[in-house]
Length: 321
Ligand code: SF4
Picture 1 (tube, rainbow, N blue to C red):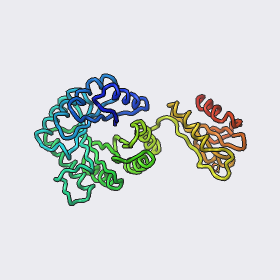
Picture 2 (tube, rainbow, N blue to C red; picture 1 turned 60 degrees about the vertical axis):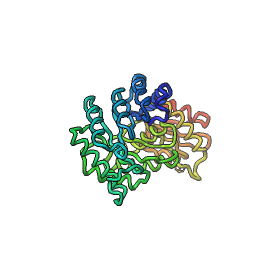
Picture 3 (cartoon, rainbow, N blue to C red; picture 1 turned 180 degrees about the vertical axis):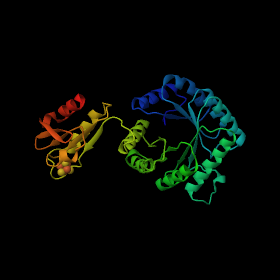
Picture 4 (cartoon, rainbow, N blue to C red; picture 1 turned 30 degrees about the vertical axis):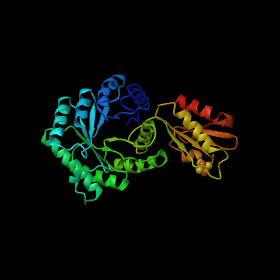
C-alpha cells in the first residue's frame, strides 16, 4: 500500500514505480476524499500495476474511484453499511467487471457481528454479512480479508472463513509494526496460512517504506517454495570455527545480489569443514578459511579464492550461471 498522499499524483506515481521495480503485483492506494478518488485517473496512466482503491465511510468515493478507472475496490464492512449504498457500488463495479474486496479489520467491526463473540468469529460474521448482501445483488467478484494485529486471531478467522466461502482470500497481519518485529509477525501469520493452503494474495503491513513490504512478502513466498524471485542467500550463523567476519561478508554479498533478478541460491559459509556440506543445494558459494576460501558449486569444490577477492569472484561466478 502506498504511503504517499494520493492527491499528490507525482509522488504517488513515483512510489508505485518504485514498487513496480521490486515486482509488486498489486498496489492499494488510500482514497480519503474526492480529490484522491479523481487523482486515480492520472495515477493509472502513469503506472502499469493494477490499482486497488481503499475506501472507507463514503460510498461516493467508491463510485468516483470506479469512474476514475481503478482495478479493484477495498471496502470496509465496518463502515459502509447501508444496503442501498453497497448496492450502488456493486452495480457500478459490476458494469466494469471490477472486484470488491470485503476488507474486515478487527479494529472496526460492525455491531451486528456479535460483540460478545470471540474477535475471530466477529470478523467472519462481518464478512459473511457483507458477502450475503453482495450475492443478493448478484455480485460475486468478491475477495475477502480478515486482518487483525493478533496472529492467532488472524489465523483462526481465515481458517474458519476458508471452510465457508468459495471466494479468494487476501491475507495479512495488520499493523504488524516496525520491520524488525513486523516481518516476524507477518511471516508467522501469513506463512502459517499459506502452508495450510489458505490465501490467494498477500500484503505484509509494515511501518516502513512499502518497498520493504514487497521484499518481505517475496521472502515469505520464497521460504515456502511458492515463488521463485531473485537470489536466495544461504549464510551460516558463524561459530567458533569461523576465521572470517561472516556477517560483514554476507552483508556485502547480499548488497550485490540485490542488484540481480535471477533465481539463484548463493551460499556464504564460515568454514571449509562444514560449509560446502551445509550449503549442499546452493548453486554457488564460498566456504572461508584463514585468508582464503573454497569456491564451490552444488557442494563440490571448483577452486580457491583470496580474501580480498571473495565478493568479486563469487559474483563473477554468480553472473556466469
Ligand atoms: S559453516 Fe562452519 S563456521 Fe559456519 S556455523 Fe557451520 S561450522 Fe560454524
